[in-house]
View 1 (cartoon, rainbow, N blue to C red):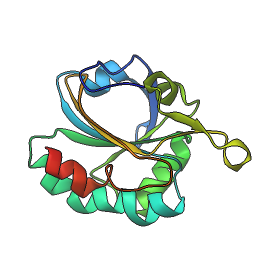
View 2 (view 1 turned 90 degrees about the horizontal axis):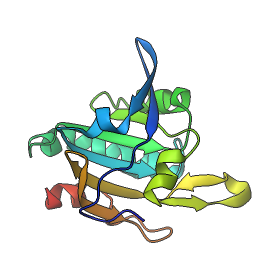
View 3 (view 1 turned 180 degrees about the vertical axis):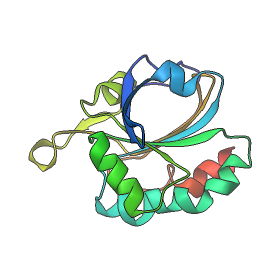
Amino acid sequence: MIEQGQTIPTATLSELTSEGMQTLTTEALFADKKIVLFAVPGAFTPTCSNAHLPEFITLADKITAKGVDAIYCVSVNDAFVMKAWGEAHNAEHIRMLADGDASFTKALGLDKDTAGFGGIRSKRYAMIVENQTVTGLFVEQDKEFVVSRAEAVLEKL
C-alpha cells in the first residue's frame, strides 16, 4: 500500500466533460498542485452517496481556502457513471474521475475484492497530495467511515 512520502504511481484515469471523454495521466492531474483526493467503493452506493461525496461538496470552499488547488473523487466505475453521480449531487467543485479497470487503485495498493457484490473496488480513503507526493493518507478500516471524511481531512490541512 502507498505510504505518506511516496509518489503517486503512474496511471491513467478518465473523466467525461462537456468536451467529451478525457484520458488523464496522474502526472497531469497531480504535478505542481496540492490536491485532496478521496476514493469510494462505488458511485451511487449508500455511504458514498449519503455522506462521503456530500460532505466534500459541502466543505469544498473551506478545503480550497486551505491552499488546495482541486478536490478529486475516484471510484472503480466508468466515466459515464461518475459524471452522472456528480451531476445527481451537484458536485461541480469536485472532479469526478473514473478508474474503470482499477489500475490506479491497484497501483496504490488500495484495492479490495468484494467478490460477487461488485468485484474489484477501492477501499474508502482520502489523501492529500502535494506535487505528486502523498503528504497525508487516511485509509478506512473495513466498513468504517471516520478518517476519510471531509471534516477529518480539513482538520489535517
